[in-house]
Image (tube, rainbow, N blue to C red):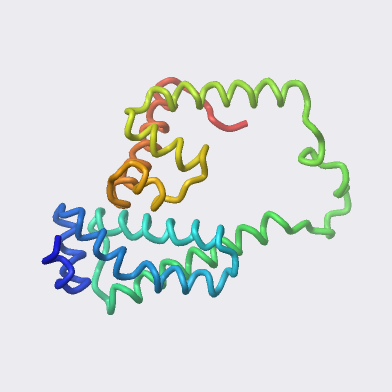
Length: 196
């Protein structure tokens, strides 16, 4: 572990791509403060910054593991570019969710389904989806279920999850990724729709 701190970013990326997971932990420690500060400076909201920060490193992990990382400058600049693009995506999505066109003649702003409490059918479908999700979560391996519950039901950050489960952040992120992949697989195999 000590020898990793002496490696360059590119050497750490190569080591991580070749299976040395602790190399990514070193990269994370080396860049987390600067990347988080950059995100927080732009979004000015700690919760949003936490989410974008975690998505940035998840995207970095996936890109490196898929062998799609190519050296075009510094690793830190690449991370910042990922974070910047995710920030833009966040604001784009927020703007889309909050915009309503007044150009449509037949659009009644107050007569919208999302403003209603919902119908009995909506409630039944929602209850069924919740039950299906619970059954799928219970079918996951213990380590994956633990991370998923901590992240989505307890709203813990991946750093908090890593500390609580005594694993590296990289391992926690990996478990979450496999949990989601397994949930999709289980739902598909059992013809379960998890959307209304």
